[in-house]
Amino acid sequence: NIAVKAAPHQRELELLVEAGFTPEQAIHVFTENGATWLGQEQRIGTIAAGKQADLVVAKGDVEKNIDAVEHVETVFKKGVGFDPQKLRESVRGMVGLR
Image (cartoon, rainbow, N blue to C red; front, side, top):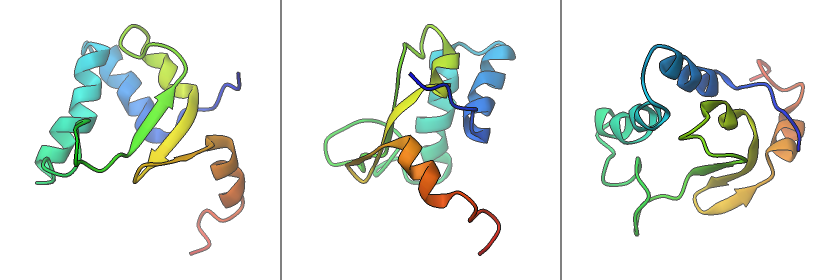
């Protein structure tokens, strides 16, 4: 199990919980509420048949311990699974170049 430094959006989830939201409420703010704000709730924001499958699988129960968002095991983009460590390695040194 590799501990990964939280990405900004992961830390924002943790901060919402620190501010008093439950982990479930914080996740809702980032997913369904975010999709609604963007006008994309028919396509993203919840898990349902026909919606775009962009998911993050974390080790642990984020509804009990929001810090589990820092332990990402798999990232799904448009239904395809990716290894998060390989993703990070593939862009190492490229940040700010484009």
